[in-house]
Length: 103
Image 1 (cartoon, rainbow, N blue to C red):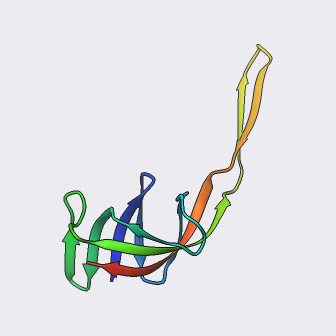
Image 2 (cartoon, rainbow, N blue to C red; image 1 turned 60 degrees about the horizontal axis):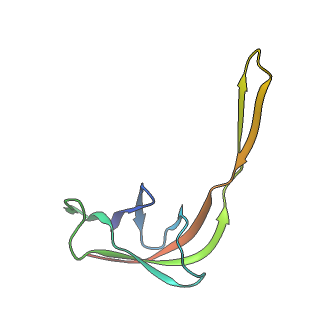
């Protein structure tokens, strides 16, 4: 059984027991969060696709940690003007474990 959930503008295909890094969720470590934007649930050949979400479906997620991703270096440059700008960015994330998928 697997489900497709949405978080932070991104979609994730998850099964029970999967560890997923998604956009930062405002929740404490070891707390349980429910993903209510379930776009699709499939169990064998039985597939339920939502319009846009599957009614009554939810995925239970347990927050394991918070962190920051790999640093992305941004360098802007314009020739002949002496313009140079250096910047970096680290995207925050939340790591969760999928505990239960309910249809």
